[in-house]
Length: 437
Image (cartoon, rainbow, N blue to C red; front, side, top):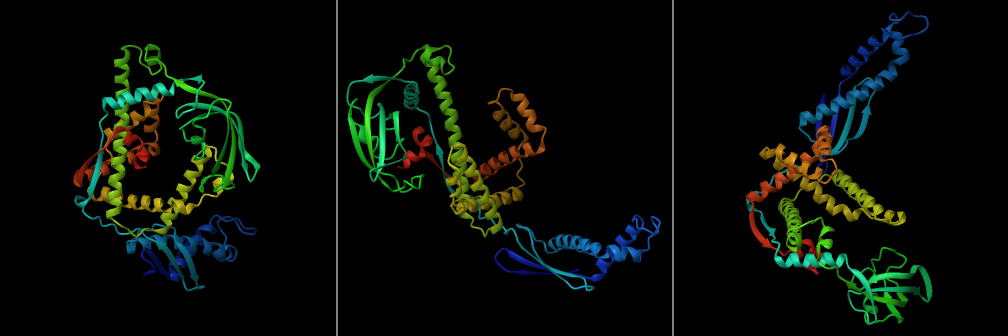
């Protein structure tokens, strides 16, 4: 067998393979002889059919089968001989000349050689956060607000009030579908409706009628309305203000605090906040570490892997939006190119992390795997059954092992990189988008 490799791109290779006829003929001969012992052909006893007759009847079929298998086997042999790691399925071009063996080319993409820059040179700022008494007090008031009752008031509406309204929308003096409602309850300042709608109702009283000249955002999800000027005629039926519940035992019991009063309630709130704070810090630290790794180690990426990851991200987005009730026609308009940069990053990080794991012989600690499974299981009615469910299937267990191994890689990098603390408030940690604006 002769093998040659041609570079046709940064990661593309064309492998040319030539197989001599004698290898093919030997295999065809073996198969013909084997078939002659089992074939049933009229006029001959089983096992007594001449090879020549088998050749006449089945020769062409057997040759095609042998050629296919020889091509598959020699392709694998060629990869091993040339030490190539394919990242894509081969594109085969066959050139068979009857009686002169088999020649073909296989075009593939290969994985890049990954040479990591020293992680000791990475500079990463990692978030730190402490839950303060002020944070706890704000959370208590937030929980009260969530369980507030609405009390009708005879005054002008202000931010934080709930107004009950009827409204009709017009574009060019024509009503449009979905642009009207009756008895609609709207909390002013909740930003549920387009810019200017809620602000336009501040200062109105029950019985007032207000006309609002507004404009739909250019990126509005309903393309038929995006960027259009619109007029809403609104009637205010009533204005209500929130009536906060008292901080008493009845209120505390709604959050599982049966005794201990306000102090126990606040302690419970702080514990939950600190748990969530720790998880957010951990997630953001992971994101920052991996971003630093990605930025410091640019790679040529196999296009086939990027395409696969792009498709997966697109399908995940469609599933998520379907669950949220987005119409099918809007799902079809999603552009997969929107996900390509994220796909490139995921593919690159997968390659970089794999190199770190291999070079440093990192493994998923069984104890940490067990802890992660038990943490997940704690949220279910029968934790022990779920733990067993993970351990009785290697595929499910491997998913958890991969998650733990990813954490091991992040910790390994963080221990060696130049790390500086980045103190953030609890509010900023929980709502990074609000902090940016």
